[in-house]
Image: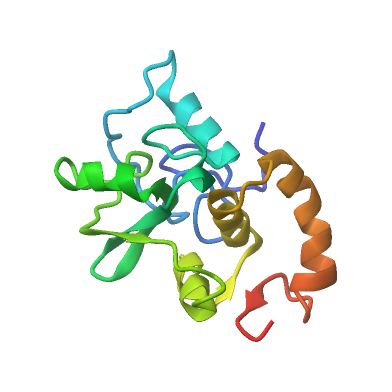
Length: 179
């Protein structure tokens, strides 16, 4: 149950931690939008999406994102939502609805993850979904689940210690490019 002081998303009803919903990516004050037809054909499509997002899976094919080239949806040169897909799977949506299957954000382009070793600034900007020039724990967590073959549960357990001891050097709760 959501604590009374934690706002909930008007799009999916999940807890909102910051400016954007961690589940569907809608801004905290966004009105609900009609949902796209789900690819998941289990008893409750929302459970399929939630599991995929928690486990670092592509929400189109439900396979681990790190198994092949992953990317994100863009509209007008900016990321249109915080979700990650296999580039191959996202390209299949280019010919159909051109909206994210989870949050219905419109897109006109699919871009692959930049290589963090060859283009660290490009990677940082790609992961910085809210364009505030710093990375939140949630932005880093989602990017790592998409790009690194690691157990998502283990990552979520260990990331707070890494964050405090190694990544967030100025202890402000975010990572800026200098860190």
